[in-house]
Image (cartoon, rainbow, N blue to C red; front, side):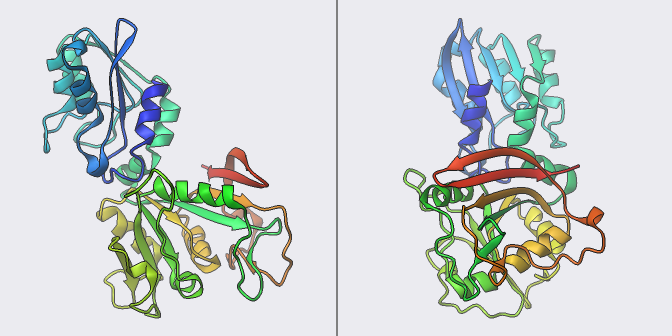
Length: 335
């Protein structure tokens, strides 16, 4: 199953509005088929694995990271495809909360007399598709806030200089984060200060550039800004938009309606504070460099308007990694 999870991770950032799924077919101890959700959401993981396995799928055990689908879209249900292929057993990591599935895929397989085992490495599978689950359950997009700071929480000098606080290994990891999110979000201040392209510049991940999102409530961004170039989809929320860019909850709901599961926030302190105050930040990726900038530096987070410490946004540490001279701490929102 962990091999299937590894395959599923290949689809992150490429398959919205679908979840990212992995499938491994094993027959008499030999892997005969592998698959993962392809860019755009089709083909599904099971279809890809069955295509590779061909006749060897008969009598095999199918390890799938998410319940096989039960609905007909561009192709027939994956649950029916597994039955038709003659698999002997299906092992599922976690159920699909999509109302079109939600146990129906399991029922199709069990009605065919095939044994189904559920819940194998469920926690890992749930974490992998947490953004998809959140959009289905709460009808909103998930947000990961990324910061790169000095030890005293500064993202730039007082004069705006910020390149580079962290080293090359940390910056490469930042691009990997971009590659695994459906979209990347900044405010107009970041565009005006840095004129970024917001692309994913990593060897071997061509075509994985996320959708670019810009909050430009005052209409300050020039049509010549790099973020509007390169043929990559860019959505700008301005004062002329139907969605108020200053009301980030409206932005989150609008993105969900567009089928975007996950967004990486790379904006400045004001944008970060807006999403934190709204309770929309689900994960944190905090890069920190072993240097100090001082009180006159620009803070990673602007005023949150807290009256009591109990009201502070609270996150639970999940993992710490060393990246050359820097550190990356990953957090999830505390429940």
